[in-house]
Length: 326
Image 1 (cartoon, one colour):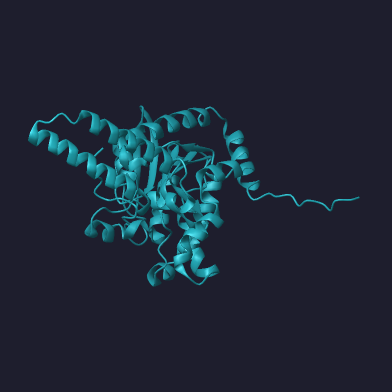
Image 2 (image 1 turned 30 degrees about the vertical axis):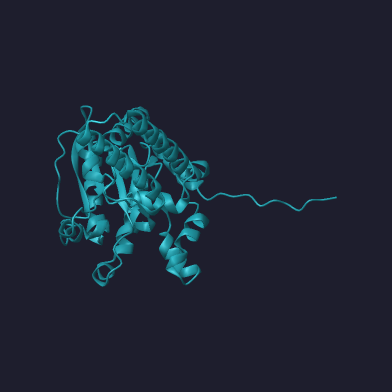
């Protein structure tokens, strides 16, 4: 294990052990001294520390992993999973939103329509992609591609990774809330199979605007929530530093969302997060997509729409306990 270029706060013990391991290996090379026993001991300590840290992550720590700067983004997964992706541009009304990408591709020879939210890596790219926060024209472009998919009978696969839709003045002037609302309605009625995957961040209506699908999948260290932890903390506690407390209150963990029926499957990640082994994460996602898509394309259109209606109609159902009689 090499010392990571970027370590989260709770990963600092691992970073220090990795630094010690690098030093021992370097010393062994320079002096030709046999340090195999010492190196093996540190490697075992690293394995034990990894198991201890990553098996007991808090909701806030998982949010930090979801935001890791090295985490694979939509285009990374597309390049490793799909073939022949052809990006299409523009909403035919205002402009092309680079935070929302999409176009046809092949998954194991089957034509599909991909729609995804894309973040940037360096400063220039982050600004160009608007930090993964789509404008209303991004959602209108997504809807244009969904209607194209419906015309040509292509299954729709959406990749969600956004802190939320862009809340700026121009975005509000061009009716971002209306654009998202139209997508919710139209996706509920879409006459082709659809799957959405939460890759990292799944924040608010910005995520939901491409998330009303037959199946919803998410990586184990991603989050899917009505609001970001910082936003929740600012509203409830008037203090953004209460974000860890908000993350726990929001029950952001993938396992909890699976239990509540919000998502249909949680995709396991490599130890420490998808950024430690992007190829393995992509391979796991590919298998998951293959399985769910094979199941969905077998359904008749009436059954598909009925199941989709039932899925969303029952979200949020709860029971009130009656008074105990003695």
